[in-house]
Structures are given as structure tokens and as C-alpha cells.
Image (cartoon, rainbow, N blue to C red; front, side, top):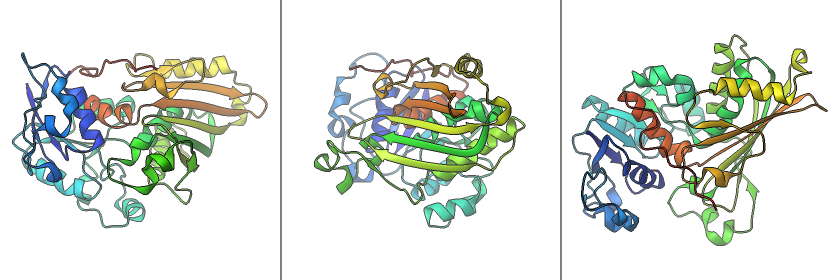
Length: 355
């Protein structure tokens, strides 16, 4: 069994890690930190964990006591906010621990871009070169050799899985629009006025119109995909997120003009290209109808629906996933599986919950 620590174990992403790791055949949680809950048992902080089996191999023990510092382990999932995460990552790597970081600290390759969007000096810029971006569908081989993986953002994962096949194939022009809808859990567990039930219920609102922090991450990876396909471009990205009155889920509708040489591309031809690109991928499903966020609820799956607007010669791709699973903790476990040479689907084979 592989010993695992979860850093900042009282967050939504940490709770989702605990839920998923409880079914993992190889990872056993031996340490959970959380300064606001030091000295408390996991089962007291998250009573739902008391439903785990009381006998046999227990990969997550509800009686485990939360500590301020992590114990010795082979793998750590860091669920801290940006900046604080980088400081924790440095200490863990110095101990020889492999790390999956769920913050934004190592997603952007340029420290200057990070400082522009996150408004402070990067705490560990020397690690940016060695950190591997954790989108398994693109960087699987590198992730398998990594000691530090930067888990992608939730809006980013949805947008990239929707658009990367088109960028690598050179089908579209640089002007790209991503209209993304997200559930309230993406804002985390901290008390915020905009996340209160009476504020969110029966309401939809756009936010971060001046620039969301996920935007440079999306642009970085779209441009990398285009370059890898031999079609380099400078993305002109418009990214507008919207807060929806639901707990989980992200649905991104992405638009881009087809290049003139692909103006006659049909919907069937486009879908065939996407199906070929994602052939054999265990968690990405190309479908022939618009997806629903509820299809992904609680699962590590992403549904992608590509189509062509023949009237305007425009590519339209709709994609959805669970922001706490494929958009965060499930993808983190998928990355960790690769880092330790385990089957990529280990602990992640649950289907979505509907209704």
C-alpha cells in the first residue's frame, strides 16, 4: 500500500479525495492536515465517512486524527490556496514525497504571467520548469515520470477537452470564445456572500468579466496543443464564467470559426475526428447529443459534443464534467495513479449519479 497525506483536509477537494480514496486499491490515507480542525477525527469533521466499512483493509479511517503537519508519506495531495500551496510543496519535495498540487501555483509556466494574475511573487519559481501539467489526456507519459504534478483548473479542464482536438488538427481560427457555467462548490467551503443560498438560488450571473484567473491557463494549453499539432497560433480568447444555482458541475460551450479550408466540414466528419482523438480514453466520451451536467455528478467522466454550425462555418463544442471530480480531486487521483505506475482508472470507475 502507498501512504498518502492530504494537506488542508477540510476543503471540498479534500473531502472528495477522501470519498474517492476510500475505494482505492493501493492508496491508503495515513495523514490529514487542517489547522482549523487539529485534534479532531475525520469522522467528526465529515460524518459521511463513518459509513465506510469497519473491517478489512481501510484506505480511509474515520478515526484518523487531523494534525497540523503531515506525517511521513510517499504521496501528498495539496489542497491549499495558491501561494500557501507552493510553500507546502517545497517542503514535501525536499522530504522525497511525490506531490499532486490542486492549487494554481504550478500550472502556469511563466512566473511573470503568474504574478500578473495572482498579484504576488511566485514562492517557488525554480519548480515551474520541472512541474508537469496534469491533463492526462495530453501529458500522460510525462506525468508518469513526474514528482510534481500541477492539477488543472476545473473550467480549464472542461475547455481544453472540448477544444484540443480541433487545435491540434488546425481546424479553427485563433478567435475562441468559451462560455462556461459552474456550480457553487467551485467557490470552496469558506463563507462568501455570493455563495449563500439566498443569493444563488433561482439566479444566474456572469462573473470575472475583466479576466478570470483560469484564462491564461486555458490560453497556454490551447496554444501548446496547436503548436504540437504543427499549427501554432496566438489564441484570442474570450472566457466568461457564469455561476449557476447548482452544487456541482461545469458546462462549457466553446465557439471558434473554422479555417476557410475546413468550411465544408460536416458534423459527422468533425465527430469522427473527435472520436479518433479520444479513442481509448477511459474518462472522455464523445457523444452525439448535448450533454447534461447531471450525467457527470460524482464521477470522473467528461462528455464532449462537437458540432458544426454550417450556416456560419463555425465550430461549436459543448463539454461538461463534475468540477470536484474530473475538475479537481478525481483528476488528481488519475494523475497520482500514473505517477505510481498504477492503472489510470484505479478508484475512479464510479458512474455519475442521476437524478
